[in-house]
Length: 190
Image (cartoon, rainbow, N blue to C red; front, side, top):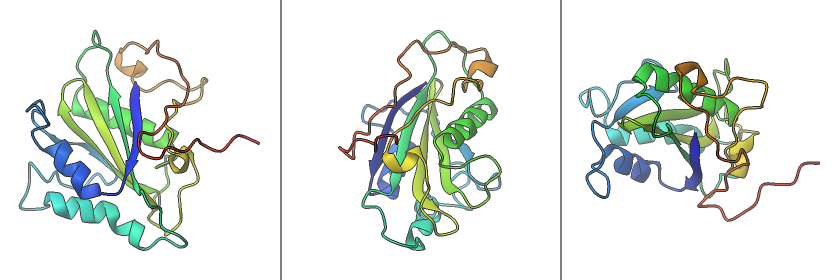
């Protein structure tokens, strides 16, 4: 399911692309499928309540309060896609997949109210984009796969995201996916 993990410097730039028409006008109905806060409005569907630049500022706010050095590339991004023969998921199902993925990546563990802020953007039927800033709301750095710029599936004993929605499990290798942006390998396990 995860396609790539990447990092970057501009939350606003990434959001502008994801909510925009795309490089070949392929983005249809871009909207929030899930945010870190369930009361957060969608900047495209309710621009009178929240603008796209306002969303970027909300995502970036914890970066400004980090204790210690700030990451040069503070934006984490991964695309999560259905297999071609899977059924189309509704937003509520994608929201569940998104929450499982950010929890598995250590971005926002379940029940952690001070975790990193994140959103799931949907602009096509078959995939979502997860965007997070690598700064916890309590001013600490996340201690997880997110800091090493990897995206790994959940451990084998847990149910993989999507399987509860009658989707096929990918036959692709389960190895961690390297970032396009960092050029660094994750530290070796001790």
